[in-house]
Every structure is written in structure tokens, then in C-alpha cells.
Image (cartoon, rainbow, N blue to C red):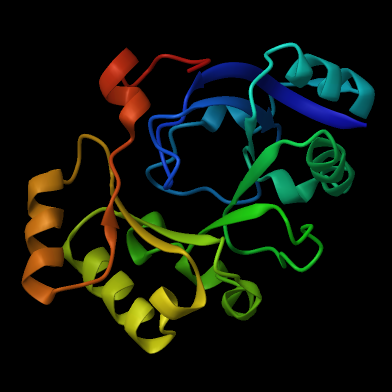
Amino acid sequence: MLTVNEIFYSIQGESSFSGCPCVFVRLTACDLRCSWCDTTYAFDEGDVKTLDEVVERVRAFSCPLIEISGGEPLLQSDVYSLMQRLLDDGKTVLVETGGHIDVSRVPNAVIKVVDIKCPGSGESSRICWANLDLLSERDEVKFVIKDRADYEFARDVIKKYQCEHRCGGVLFSPVHGVLDPADLSSWILSDRLNARVQIQLHKYIWGENTRGV
């Protein structure tokens, strides 16, 4: 059983799959309270569904790309069975996690997008650094950047842990409406970082407060 906030079909707004059609399975609950969180409605809104119900709903969209998100999806133990069911269906499966929960139970074929919390989130003390050792070349790490201090934190982390060699992508995402993407881009270029600037594409398409996209 899973408590599901929403299941919807949209354009992937983040990660290296940005711009691709994708089915999103957003699970309910999160034990983090990031200062810039844009999905607070997923903290407690949702309905209990069986794995069969979730899988059948996903199948109905006939889309090869699926993302499981939240909230924090790894808080629900049956999420691992859901991932495997979707993989068995031949889907490309991404899971986006806040980076504070051990990802070792995530099936190897799932693409992990691990959010490393910067100080501006208010949750940087919660990072599970051991997760960086569990990344493969298909996985990605994400840093949501609120200001210059966050940028310098993220820059130092990717250098210290050699993130570009541990995984397939390093994503720097400016907090929407707070940090100008041009400023973030100029910092990355100045430091010659091997990182991808990631804007939340769905917010530019449908607006920042639109749900189900």
C-alpha cells in the first residue's frame, strides 16, 4: 500500500530528462522542511492505493518514462516494490529523493536523483553523505541554490567528493523567483565547473503555482 498525493502525465521539468514526456507518481509525506519547498501540499494530502492501482494508473498513460517523487518517496517502504514493478514493465524509472535517507535499497536499474541540501534550505545537517558512495554512472546529484553561499557550498561538495566522476550528472538548480539563473550560470562559468544549470521547466511552461504538471 502507498499513500499517493497525485499521479499525472506532464513534461519532465528537471534532471537530464528535462523536456521529455513523463508520468509522475508523487507520494505523500516528507520529514524535511526546506525553506524553498514548492510542494508543501504533499506533506499530508493523499489517498491510500494498492500497488496494483498505482501500476495500472501509470500504464494507462503509455509513457516509457516514470518519476517517483514526493514529498520524500523513500519514507514509504512499499516504494521499492513499486519501482521494481515499473522496471518489470519495461519503464525507465527515476526516483527523486531528498538525500537524507539511505538509497541502498533502490533497485540498481532505477535512476537516482539525489538532492544534496544546501545551507539555504535549512536542512543541510540532514545529508546522508554515504549515499554518494552508492551512486552509479546513471545517477544524478542535484543542488538547489538559493544564493552565493549555497553555490559555494555546492561547488566545494562536488570538488571534495568528485561528484562528476561518481555519477552521470551534477545539477545546479536556482530557487525559482529567488536566484537569477543568469547569476548562477555566470558563477559556474567563472569557476569552470562541470555542472548543468537546471531551471524548473514546468514552471516556465505552466506557471509556478500550477499543480499536476
